[in-house]
Amino acid sequence: MARIIKSALIQSTSTHSGSEDPAIIKNAMIEKHIPLIEEAAKKGVQVLCLQELFYGPYFCAEQDPRWYSITEQIPDGPTTQLMCELAKKHSMVLIVPIYEVTIDGIYYNTASVIDADGTFLGKYRKNHIPQCNPGFWEKFYFRPGNLGYPVFDTAVGKVGVYICYDRHFPEGARALALNGAEIVFNPSATVAGLSEYLWKIEQPAHCVANGYFIGAINRVGTEKPWEIGEFYGQSYFCNPRGEMVAVACRDKDELLIADLDLDQIREVRDIWQFFRDRRPETYGELTAP
Image 1 (cartoon, rainbow, N blue to C red):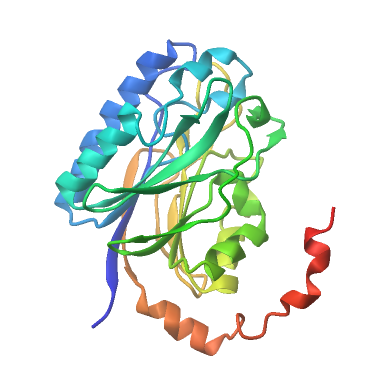
Image 2: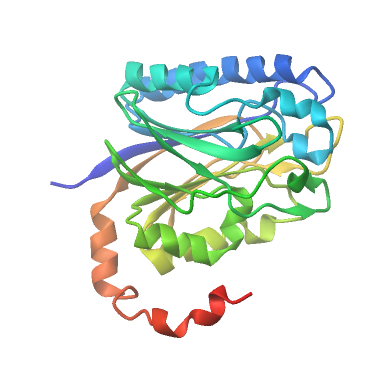
């Protein structure tokens, strides 16, 4: 019997200008996403991923400590607890990216993985942190991740997470495969002119090289007051052959749904024996300083 998983991504515009109170924006964005999660449940979605830092604008367009105020503990913070309740209510696996605090002054760009019975399974912390123009000042906000590349055994299969800038690094994508990932979700925030020419190249290549599915998310719109560029949407699902099986629009909110046949992973890997033919003993230079 085929292992077909109904999977979904949410790409969204920000509800407010970034000049507003961060707490107001955070609450409004959470309220905006709840009915979208409910809509996904009504359509039979089994696993759903939200966009990077889903409860805010992309505040890394500026360097301002006021954004530290929307950090939360994981899993004990209110947003993760709410999402655990929603996961249980809808029997849906949720991947929830938020701004995490461990102790005062130590912050991470993090995504929680919550199983369909509401159990918090663990989290991934973004490993690769950019600091580049135009307006991607993430080293001001985030410490590099320190949890490696975990894979979570969920009700729908083995789920891995890679966050935004991580996608430019094939090493972690391969580590997720070796750790057993069947679906890798990459919640992102990226703009036209900077990365659009890479958007539909890099992650399909990861799918081909590693024989798994990817759900790639990008937010939409131009966020004021910064206007660092257009978040160009086009969230998509890609299969182990590198084929896009569903692609969202460029310029508006969308709940993107696709049926993913996980049996295709075995079919592709039986043809392309990349894991058999790896030569890790020759790759020492990759970890040299």
